[in-house]
Image (cartoon, rainbow, N blue to C red; front, side):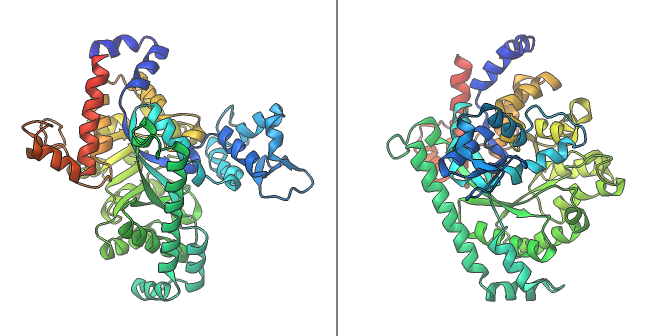
Length: 464
């Protein structure tokens, strides 16, 4: 396998075909709305008869006003269609008066009217086609009614008192409404994939879990309400496996309230200690923010925010005592979700300027992920191809990262592996997969079952 991969580095198209078939485990950093390709948003918009604002190059709710046309026009007007695809994504983008960073984050408001909760099946099909077996989708957020409740209640220095007011004002009911939204997303996903008829299809076998997103650019009283709602949801619904913070990390509230927001997470963690936490931290670079803004985000996410995984972590070497932080992340097994294409198109960080090799050098676990593959016009196979060609990775490197994607996932249950060097399996399976003890163990533990299945997929792939 090592020789084969070495040969394929000379031919990127053949390398892509090899990596497309290779088992890739899970995608742990995937925003559902950003994962949908623009073409599919336009198809959905046409079906719902949304409107296209031709000046703003955005979808809006009907009825259509002057300067707007029914989205069905995109099925016959290729010029309009192509312009909208470019507006909704990084396709054909050339930096000028607008930076890649701004164009990227602007896209979400342009296609937001189409919604993404009914398009989960698209993302699952793509994952299955690429031999992925697990997805953690950031598909829920605390905007809307939860944030509005936070605005009404306000925020004092006494988190406990504010929590009491939020609960008295109906926070639990809003959490239940979010749970009902998960029910609907799951029903639509299973129906669109035809899982009642073909439960053993590749797409229906992909396990999907959800991550709740706190919108960090909202005012602090709204952020606090979102945090409490997210933790309460994840504690009560096994399909929601973690809480994360999203939106541009360099925004005003994101920077100004960062320490306060991590303090909120610390507070919620004390109330709900069993809820998993993964945090966007360090999605910054020199020049985007003042130098002092690069010095503490990852450390506070780990030490105050209790992050079990870090998303992006691009500015790690600008942190105070960076090598000490890396040693701490290694010792505490804090995995970094690496998003190579996203970091290039948003921050302009790529190649040897990216800390991906640094994390590996210091023994910090890493896994490749997509971030917003629809907006970036990428996919997980392309992320692996980019990593192999840029960083001269071996097959063993790839295999370790794929195993990491499941080992450090928030899939429920115990591990299949005895330790994270993947040298030996747990005792119930030590005598073989077909033993009664192993079958019972795998039946009880979703994570172990996913990891055992991954080994079967690797064995099949390597026999080709």
